[in-house]
Image (cartoon, rainbow, N blue to C red):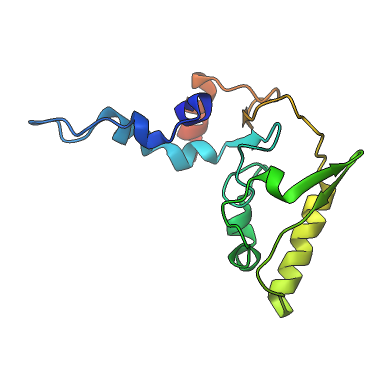
Length: 157
């Protein structure tokens, strides 16, 4: 949340280790819940300039580098933002994956699956809107501590 809100790497917010009997910093404990948190959250990419195409969870339920590893491995720019690979043509989006080499066999099938997924997305040109966090358990996408607590408790069961 801090990283998204202030656009700084999380490492800027990490505290140093405490001395004495207290062996872990507060931020180390908070960061342990990072993966669990993202099981229930995704990103609305907004103007697409801040969200990583391959590594951020901007399509609910998936990170593209994990879902399409062979295509991601062929990417010319593994750190590309959505805006680097998508261009708006009226109401449609043209995707250019910019791969380093031609894919064959299963990797080509994986690429076609990705293209199909991308073409099914409703990508509205949101030139003036920044990226925002979507909390999937809430129908309006709004985060609350109580809903996060409920989701984490369900995950432990």
